[in-house]
Amino acid sequence: MRNFTLFRLSLGNKHFNLIKILTGCWLVLLLAGSRPALAQAVAPRWSPEKAAAWYNQQPWPCGFNYIPANAINYTAMWDKTSFSPEVIDRELALAATTGFNCARVVLQYAVWADDPAYFRQTFGRFLAIADKHHIRVMPTLFDDCVFNDQVDPKIGRQPEPVIGWYAWAWSPSPGHTLVADTTSYPRLEKYVKDVMTTFRTDKRVLLWDLYNEPTNGGLGAKSLPLVRGVCRWARSVDPVQPISIGYWSDNAPLHRLIEANADVTTFHNYGTAAKMREEISKLAQLHRPLICTEWLNRPRGSDVETVLPILYEHKVGALSWGLVNGETQTHLPWGHRPGGPEPTVWQHDLYHNDLTPYRPEELATFARLIQDSKTKAYRQQHAQVAVAPGG
Image (cartoon, rainbow, N blue to C red):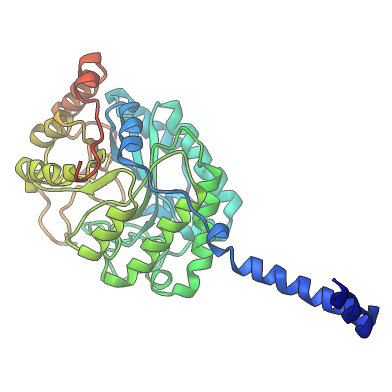
């Protein structure tokens, strides 16, 4: 202490105070640099037990991938120039007559980027309409799919349909240019956090499906950094709903990312009943609830009569593709172009554009199994007990 006092006297108060200030600044920087993990801490992935407990509280998820019949793509669904609450209300009321309880929709970054407040309000209006018809929503934040050379979305009025071209004006989110450009990620992070934070405790949201078919549309490995990013950003929000990204291809690096991050296992399967059984058996080894977020390709044998009972039997969530056939023309087979033969059997969709059923017997099957899934016996029989891998 005596030496310290002599040191202070030798410097003079002015210089000594300057040293104190510099030392304090150095300590602040040192402490700040030692805490990056705390500043960036994210919630952990749900345990298998937590995921099973959540799923046991849900009815059997049975619904559809939804886009209004008057929307040629998901940009049109959300855009200021074409958002149609009256159409959505009419079509979801129709879905409710069968008993469907969930709908998966792709959101559009470009519409949010144009006006975040408008987008939050519009998505909230959509949730209110769905809730009115007892339908919970599975939002998808990003989507790599394209069916033409338009790889980046543009807001405003969308193109008119080209008759005979399957989903010709599909618009990915956020678009391939932004996916491949990592300097855009701070903007994409802001989008993810804004939307998810706004609705992170909203009971009308069933599950956050973060990214539809990453690596599709020719992007390949360019999508993987965004997959990592969206998983990290979603965890930082810590929603009360689970998060997932669906298995859809044989991409091993993508599979590893999904297995490390998904609370619930979601997947796409457009194959026969045998293919569906095979995939359910394989994915069950991950010891997480299963939801098939895309199926129904009648010409390939993915049909209501044979596949839906398998999903019901195992309480695997079942979201078929399409509700009312419209401007996306998804009754046509993949790759269909103008001049091709009109299909004798629809690929997707459940209703004609005039709201009459494509096959009434399919809707009767849906209604019967949905009703049966509400029984106490079904719920007790299919209550899941999570077993950790290797346990």
